[in-house]
Image (cartoon, rainbow, N blue to C red; front, side, top):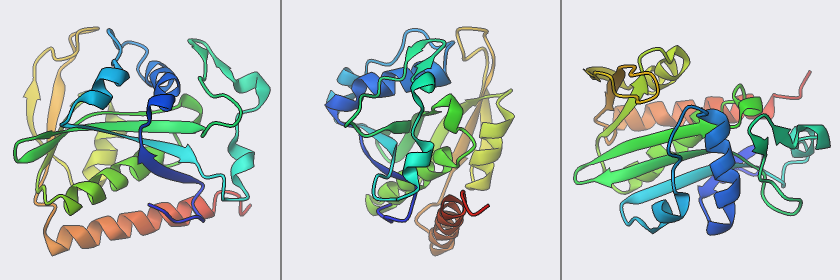
Length: 207
């Protein structure tokens, strides 16, 4: 998305973003071990990492910048330095033969209610459509009801289950799949979701 009225916009990860995105991952997934080596991930030909950032062209974006007291989390610094883009989330996906597999979506804890995951997922799907992939798969914790609801809203369906998939607590993972995304019906659906995200973004400070 390139709408300059949006409070958040997406782009691909740059090497200079690695400190921030690593801290976002730690903030979003404190149980994850080992953490993703994003520098290696950038070098994978099949991997794409999208990030969301505050849109400095939007006059309201300054209201969402962290105050000095919020530059630290329990796990450490936010990774943001003055003058850099302030990143709020990331999405990693792999191109696997004839389908896309979403590896992770992570959002800073204080920004989880601002539709950032939806923004990243919409950007991901739009990119995938342009590359003519017709199917997306992912795994999600069986207990992660909000994430399951998000994916269901985008049209994902539960197609299977992986037993004891997560090493931290041996929780099962649901396998979710979305296809066909190249149909005109789904392209219309994703445009409507995008309009809703833009509308909610632009109305955050109306009251």
